[in-house]
Length: 198
Image 1: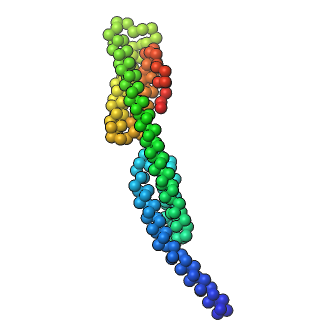
Image 2 (image 1 turned 120 degrees about the vertical axis):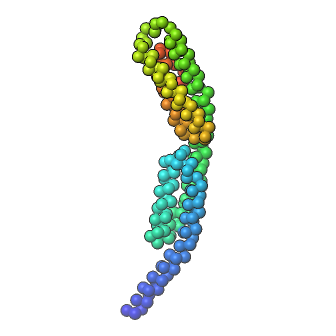
């Protein structure tokens, strides 16, 4: 009995030693992952929020394993994180490039649509009779919509100037949708490719 008891105690000591030998590597790997994610987390949440949540969940799982004393699992999970964080950085860069290209197109096209509507509103405002199919209410709504769209476009350009291309594109798409709706209500021809958001 004593031999079995001694063997059991020895096995426990060996197991504890194995665990403690993995504690420091796991802690170091976790810190490396936390620092790497911390450097990109703000941009990740802005540009690729779904991927950011996935990486955050993996980091949390590794931290939980470490807290529970499962250093082997914590180490394995933490060692997998650098590759995920590198992929996250690549995804951020790709999304930024995509948004930059989209914004460049918007910045070239949307002001022309707004100007076209403004010219149409000015012409209709000076005429004694509105054309068939355009009521006074439609015209008033168009003027109100134009003022709103102009303000939203100013907000979009300000956001782009501050580097917030996600907000800039959201606002630009709102303006585009609104202006196209006004053009249709005023019986204007909508340019090809201007029918929907980017």
